[in-house]
Length: 279
Image 1: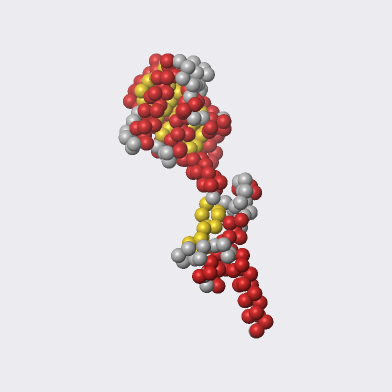
Image 2: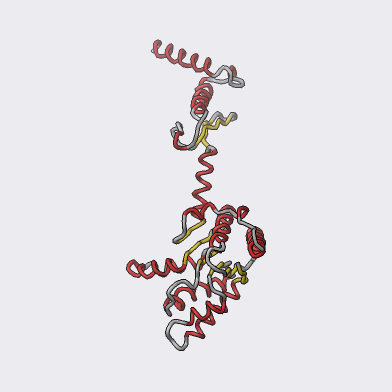
């Protein structure tokens, strides 16, 4: 027993030497001294750390914090873990279907302003973000123009900015989504996907008018989504290579005499949900 007590005293003595530069080290009891020793040792693992891949902490991404009143050894996320958590949250808030991964890096402040149309839509996009972040009701946009003018990129910019502000959104490339949706009949997930698009705070429908239109696509997919969002005042963005009149003709070309009326209802909802902007 005496030998054990001697060993413990030696251990405590060594610990006190190791923490001698710690503030008020002389006033600490043995328990507090051990806690400080463990804290300082764990803190060394964070020196020159280059990221989570090389983290030497037992709990990766969490650095030690000492409560100097209770001498409780706590943990809090390091700067690298905070970034990881923010990215994860952003990914959860922002979903995309059939979009290039590179667009997740699109930034509104890097959007090219090399034409009057681009300056105009950039101004409207920034105004939309301001309204959303202040909790005010605001319409989306129907953005139309030829290939490669930046319609999709702008929507990606907006989605990324919304995610940073904690506002969820969905980006969907409509033609591929419709093709994929048809295969979802096998696992009965069609209704679930449609409901997801109905209820997300901000929806971006990309390249409407490029899909092979059918009465099912128009009346069972697109129509209910737009109707729900119209009734709930949910911001909706639509991009297309077609003017509104051309889109009307496209939606009416589904093989039935009643198609003009049904296509007209879709166009009416789009006009009520969005402002038209040419790019």
